[in-house]
Length: 252
Image 1 (cartoon, rainbow, N blue to C red):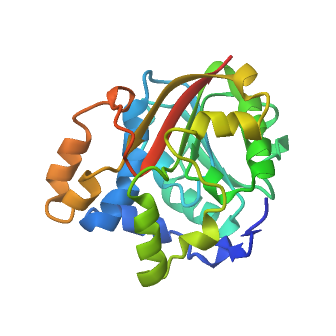
Image 2 (image 1 turned 90 degrees about the vertical axis):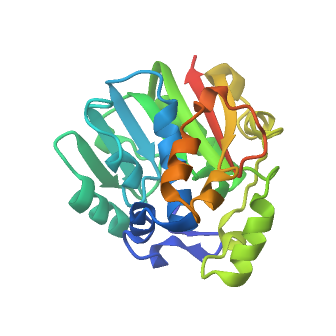
């Protein structure tokens, strides 16, 4: 995968652009970006160990995870400007970010495997062939029993309407970026079709959604939206209508 995917040039997004939005902690858009990371952190069922975030962008997600949860954190992305920003803002002795030419590059990791691998709103930007490559790469980077966490827009939700509105009124054009679409009811079947070995590689732990109503509540009270969004753990939330899918599976 390179910076230009199906005509969209991701290098045109300023370094730290979405990080600034997520950390603003004010309004619907900020809450949306903050919550997509917070719900994944809420889903962690164990602490300590190592985590690899594929498609880390500006490093916001790993920057939210303290050392006592994962004491080895690695983020990789194909955008050098975003990775430079991530290292300057979030790099520490236990957290590092690397720019790669494509996500199948493994030399800099020296064959290392991790307890967690995350793909946060990545697969919708890829072709089906690229998704298959990504799933195989994620599998190779997980220890046996390690957890793969994926989030992606849920097209059985309000998301298609929100996408239309954003395409019309925002400077962000998601119809140029989201080229492979999933929904709550087909996501595991579609991943299995795209990656025929999927069921031999992974055992699903849970499938859920997030971003139902709380992002919109954040327009009234950010604090109340935060409190409500954490009331039920991701693994116990079964409603299929949230705007984002959240999947966890473990390597067999």
